[in-house]
Length: 363
Image 1 (cartoon, rainbow, N blue to C red):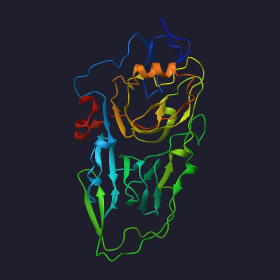
Image 2: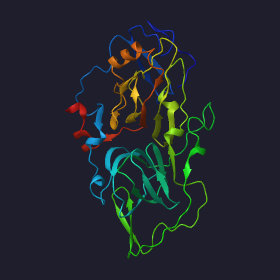
Image 3: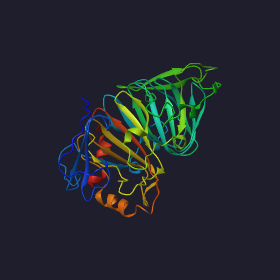
Image 4: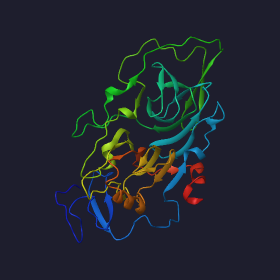
């Protein structure tokens, strides 16, 4: 229920997310920062707790995880998190696939954390590089040929990924779809094999289909359902000088129950007293996964490959020391140089056994 009435009770700052005077800014909001909101101004850090039970934040380093495709050309990506709407996986392939793939349960969106190479797709060849998003429609046939070992964060939806509805800024901000790279058809000749394997990735699978001809044999295509790449360097970051904006302004693509965002380098908030770090919150209606691609936060390097999961209803946010440092160094930094990929899900995510086994908070 929306309301035009916003109340103030007790001691509150005049501006939102600013001028805290020692208080801790904790937001209790619905709808992933777009619905009804309460900003609670606390005496103490709400993340200073000890958790017992399964509902707790989880942090793992991608470099410590071992997808089987990293060492076996016939291997597969490693499942990180899952729910009824999506699966989040990690791939680290260094050699060409000896087969083709077809994800038949939903669209596939992959972020290139490291590496470069080529994808053979039915729509044509797509070259990829670090910082690229790769979109592959549901049931599209493709094959990866790395030029160098490639780390992919993969999000498989059980629905279609699409561009978010245009907001107040119009259709091209922050994501301008005209910047995507689209393949030109290039059918491949048979190479003498008796048959070609296409693995169908699906719940209860996999299944393999064996063709007597090369599966990439498309001479031409038309329509509005196609594979593409998009590099985060072309993303238009939305900023404000007087308030730290909510994650929703960084939305890139979405599917039912799944929202993908890019947090990228931008000018830092410049009005004195403005908080430059995300406020404490428990994101009541969404689980959050953050994948740290690189960069730094006011001179502190961000650990590349860190994967952080914050379940809905559990407080999280930058530690108080980081907040105090951002205030102290306000005049020393004019930019935020972070590069973080975020995935929010409406349903709770279940971490895989491998993720829980490498949880930094449990070691």
